[in-house]
Image 1 (cartoon, rainbow, N blue to C red):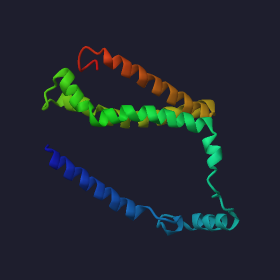
Image 2: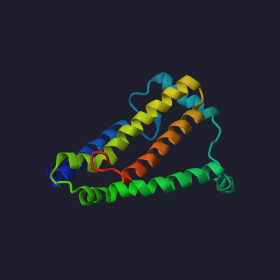
Image 3: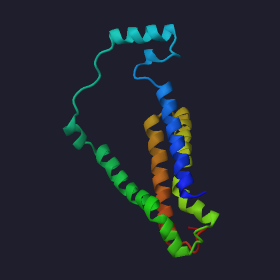
Length: 169
């Protein structure tokens, strides 16, 4: 299909999602039609005993946290690759491997960061959940999957430099 048809199709999907979201989700759980009387009572009781949970932003604590700086570094490095994939990859593949612009395999390869990313997010989440069930350690499970995924990504970037053809790339 042409880009105009794809644009219109995704626009319609977005409108349908917004309509479904507006119909189903509410700002307050008690406003939702599927909340039963027992849930309504539990919501009201928890409101009466709940203490305010919001506090000021601990800026000093954030700026002094090694974890915050490491995650910023990780996202800084990751964003470079992501930006390359969503902006320059199609023309890079065209220039380096002389892909036919009408080729279905070329289209799949050019869009691979998006569809592989979607499947990888789902698979990574399922893997983390599985590891948490096995080990009982949420932090270690998340870190392990993240480190392995980022390490494999780095290896893939280096290997791509030496790829002899678009399929290996």
